[in-house]
Amino acid sequence: MYAVMKVIEFCYGHRLLNYQGKCRFLHGHNGKVEIELSSRTLDRRGMVRDFDEIKRVVQAWIDRELDHKMLLRRDDPVAPLLRERNEPVFLLDDNPTAEAIARLIFEHTASQGFPVTCVRVWETEHSVAAYSPDTTARRRPAVRAAARSTTTAA
Ligand SMILES: [Zn+2]
Image (tube, rainbow, N blue to C red; front, side, top):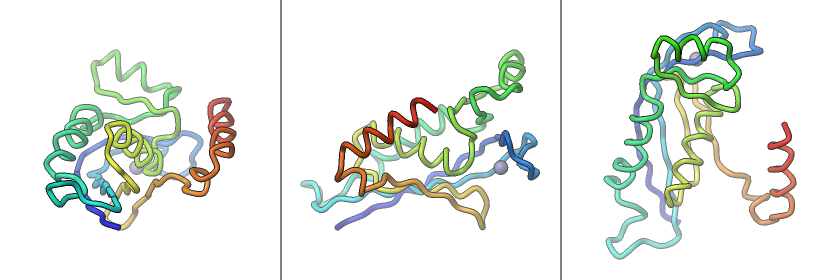
């Protein structure tokens, strides 16, 4: 198995709802994202994927959609106020934790055709969250379908 990893840095603000710690207040991070792509074989260039291609597609999306934005849960009451003031906001269905941001970036990267196997979001120098799909569920599609419909209902 071959793997490549691209590191992308971006700044974001967020706050966590239903949370008692200080992350319930609006604050920001200088985040670092690690995007890991894996493949059993190499392409005709001898690569899993060209680093420049990852940069052009994924980094450009992060720069455009997430960098220097306030990442908020869709129902956060502060979101409409920020939008009214033309402050850049990106809304997520879930609490904008590092875990949720990792999953968001994973899903976007996969949707662009990259063989992504893991995305890690470093929120600080000492705290990192990762998302990779449940490979057990992937081998059993019925289980994954059930899990997905539960997620949709919630
Ligand atoms: Zn935070």
